[in-house]
Image 1 (cartoon, helix red, strand yellow):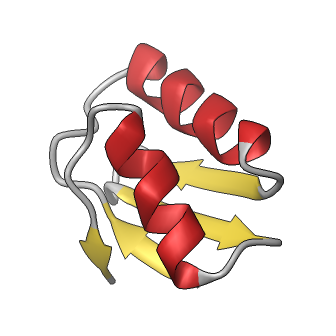
Image 2: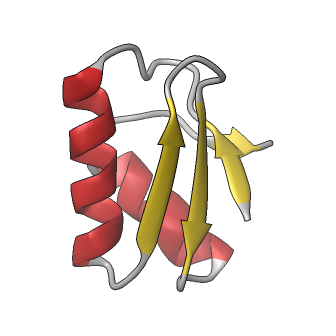
Length: 61
């Protein structure tokens, strides 16, 4: 599933989101230019909770 993360702007943001998803047990594929995150291995609730816990707003893409 893919999410929009509008306040993701840099490599640090990318790394923080990848780490948060990995810690929750999933895999994140981040596209900074499009401000999207594709998540594998987690349900929607766990994925959005992990991204929010990393400090980012998230919405379904």
